[in-house]
Length: 286
Image 1 (cartoon, helix red, strand yellow):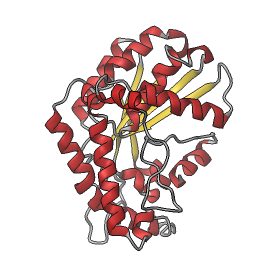
Image 2 (cartoon, rainbow, N blue to C red; image 1 turned 30 degrees about the vertical axis):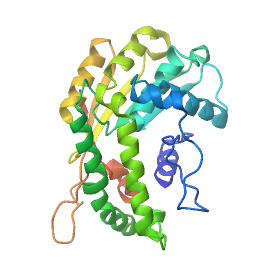
Image 3 (tube, rainbow, N blue to C red; image 1 turned 30 degrees about the horizontal axis):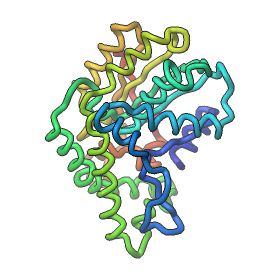
């Protein structure tokens, strides 16, 4: 939420966040999860039909209400990690689905760290991705906490590290991460190229001037450059304006012993990096 607030302040925009269904913590009782769970139909659509629109539709409805969006308004969609799937679901919902009549003008689509974004991937690949998210990426959490401290935001740390029951909470978080990866298996393995290109082709009036930026961290363990390149090519074939970005470390972004700091899939956990993003974000034309 702090990262989003920084973005909103710098860009002078209103921003709202929709979280993944089933992964919302009740901070008054952090050992339990409540609310925001998927319905059987939403789960079936995601797992079997590779369709994220049913869950994204509910999220979009909430965002429209929260922001009091009006017909024909200009909006920008941003998705990160598996949130990219939900971003595509929102696009299809507002172009050919339930909210097509709202005629929102999508000015920008920003996707950071998409996972398996193009074509079909095997189930073992999906399991390896889950293992990376819950093991390698999790091991870097302390580094991100330290980076927050370097700019005076050391108090901003995950609540599970503050909890007296942090070991139990850590285990529950890992289970939720695995569930999120596996439950969206079909949608992730099939990529987002087909539904996104179809939405662009079928809704030229609302998507004609949209600018797409797809970015990945330079050391990402789960977002693959080859997938992103193929996705960009598919979008270009239907006339989309696409840019590719690489999130990289800056010249002064080194540890005290002179080693460059890693910038991997979980880079957004570092508010310190978010605050200094202009220094280490390099855009490259697709």
